[in-house]
Length: 237
Length: 264
Image (tube, rainbow over all chains, first blue to last red; front, side, top):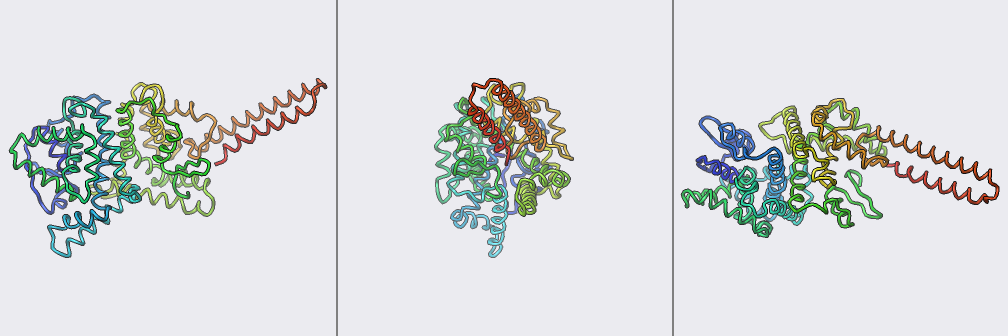
């Protein structure tokens, strides 16, 4: 999500500085990442940030008509519903990944036993949520199948266009880029998730194009490492 | 299965959950999305996600958590269809499950109290209804002139809001301000729900009564017809009485099958 939002701000041509903090979740007013700190205002989560930016006069979806805006919102929900939940599932409900990657990473800023306690607490919270929406009973194969279906839908919608709504990038492009880039570049115990995305060549081309246009245009080294660091940070949520 | 609705029972196979039911029907060659392009198929998935994320919490809340609605409509309605003693326990369990789900998925900070969460989910639901209305525009169905899976999903979500008579009806009032969505629901109701009564009939008791009336009329018509034929047969003695019995049996068969369809 951090990356989605970075991409979004780059697309709006607004300069930003990414800072990594261990207590980021506590600094955020809603407890959720990402959040921005502008002057003396702090705004968190992608939806409110988009609205905040819009209120300041920058918006990516002004050129869309009502039906397209409805479509865009629908696709954003699809991405949130499927990809985000699948990412959370993989991080916190798949035992292998949890043991080898998530627990060490999440607890790394803290000393023992705090690191174990906090990561177990987070795991319990996420599992409760999964149970409430009915994902707890799903196997890894089913989750991967859902991700595949979602990617197929995105791929079909994108087609051969450069962005989802043809020539101009919108919030949806930023959101999709953030999630797909994270999936493609983060090291997990298996490559199955990134393989699912790689099956769709127009999606990988889409990610590459946005990366080149918005992240490599600036300071090459720092933005690439910042993007990589924030990609890892977004997995820590 | 005890808790999961909707449930499809086909010969010996029992399937629950909408996605699995749809897959099963597709394999049996029942597919409403045959004529859709790949992009339209993708749109379907996206809109369904939108419905589940934005409209479903408010819908569930209206049915199961809103105290007046739950006590006066939902609980008696469900309890009447479930065998005792489960009817005492299951509705309460479903209500708690729904509240849990809403709080877990929508109830994080900065929304700290239930009333704030409720306000947010109803705002989202109204926005979702507006979006659907814009998408539907003036066409009859979401993808042109023939209904598709998306139309079925949208109808499934909208019809309960539109038709069930609740004491607290803020969503219904909002929906009534969107005439194209109301027209959409009415169209589907008249085309596809004339005589059959499903376990989740959107208008509940009203539809059941209306259907009973129609059935009674049908039966009356048939019995009138039988009486007339009886008269004719009596007047013309060369027709053997055997035919009379066959007629009665056929009429009896027809009568019993609609009755079977009525029972849950």
